[in-house]
Image (cartoon, rainbow, N blue to C red):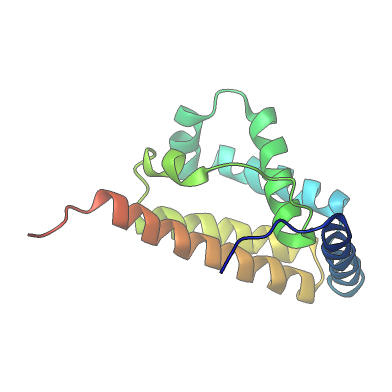
Length: 150
């Protein structure tokens, strides 16, 4: 099997499909760019003030605005398929020393924020994505930090 580069028409077709899916999502669950910005700013505002997570993230993030912008791109890519996020979050999160209880706290604050800001279907959609992300990060952190046997 040979790798082929998609033609311009194929790339345009995929872009059109992503756009249609994003528009449908915006209409059915109430997620758009403005609501993603509000989600990110509200959620990370809670993180910054949190007794458990605030100090952990505060040691790693000295200028919050670029991080918030990056998280808006991340959630836009997840929720609206914009492909704006281009990063490698795993190495950074490994260095934070996160434990399972930190992920539970993170998810608790995320769930709370999503329910405050979105209609039920939109909150459920975002929470499902956040739960998958947390699970993936926990598995990645464990893989890279737990000593291998044998």
